[in-house]
Image 1 (cartoon, rainbow, N blue to C red):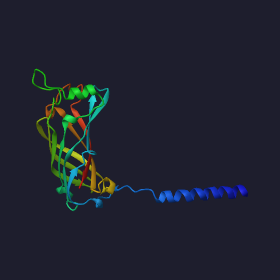
Image 2: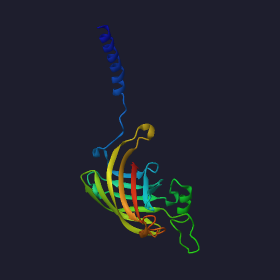
Image 3: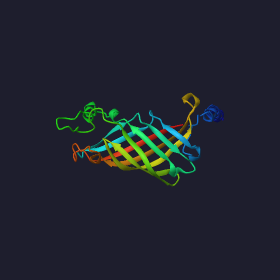
Image 4: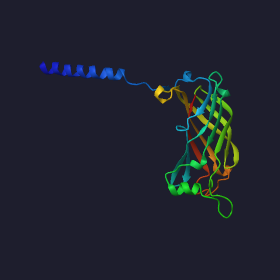
Length: 214
């Protein structure tokens, strides 16, 4: 009997300690509730907006890299999401990979032929400007736009999905935030980057995380 009472006392004490902790668990400021989105012009959060790219390497493995420090704007009207406008700039010169040698090759100056293997030295930033937004199911959309890369402009469609919205804590600036994820596929040869095709795939998969603040 004593052991049973002792065990019950331990359980009760554990619950007494646990319940307050659970009650005090912080809530995330962002949520997947689209009602948290407010209208207006948002600025890209350069520190949290990323464009990942992936290619097939010789049929052995995929290889991926990253563009960051992205700037631009998003104009939103929650009552008319199809009227959204996106205009972002991607600094190609800041491309990041896990290989210093590959990064250097991507930014290698043009040779005697006058043409670089990839982007060349001091490449111009890429830019995506939306031309149409087709909303599906309330939280996803196809965003069609013009992508300018390596001096060439081509239409590209993003499969985008709403990720979260809300107001940041005061200690983080207190700004309203909205975030999305998106995927797309492009052919690098369309943008004049044809080095090592088909050993390194022409098709490039894009995996995008877009954060905006107002």
